[in-house]
Image (tube, rainbow, N blue to C red):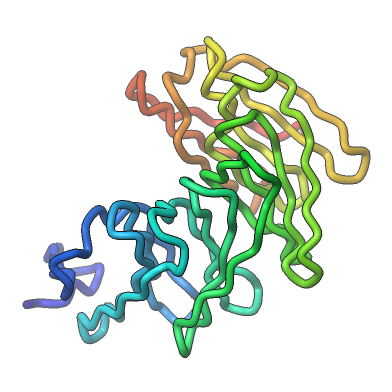
Amino acid sequence: MPIATGRTGVVSEYKIPDPKGEDPHTAVFDSQGMLWFTLQVANMVGRLDPRTGKIDLKKVPTENSHPYGIAINSKGTPIFCEFATNKMAKIDPQSMEIAEFPLPEGTRPRRMAIDAADRVYFTDYSEGHLGRLDMASGAVKMWASPGGAKSAPYGIAITPDGMVWYSESGVKPNTIVRFDPKTESFARASIPSGGGTVRNMAATSDGRVYIACSGVNKVGVVEPAR
């Protein structure tokens, strides 16, 4: 199978080596060029080396945990959400051993973002919270989202100034929420198109936040204050 270089226009597909490896879901590159991805239905995390096409898979210890959002911290360690249970986890990039971290009962982490201090912020889709996990200590802090228990926080990103941005997909129209970790205060605005469920978002180095408005076929941009 040809390996895409990014300049040839060739599209390469990689076959999951385990027939049980269903539902590759969210993917992220680490600094070494390895692609890490969650497999929600298969309850696995995968690692692809694009240079060789080799894929390694690791089963998540908790059954039916639905691995979902994933990101890489400053040490190169992949961190991921276990959406069907109240846990976050990390996977060792060499051994692929997984360590899990408990969250409050009833929490269902869906997406996550990591700040400059390697603290993990996550959206609690089930009970309407923004959460923060310090993996060094295991300490967890939760804040009620402004839209309430049924606000279904989803996509999340952190801008270079440390502000945490996420969307409430359970309110109509969807909202974009900004959380200031220093003051623990929220600001909130409706998305003009309605959003239609913002499943993911990304922050740029200049402080913009791009939001994927999947239900209305649009991409939105939150401009930083000048």
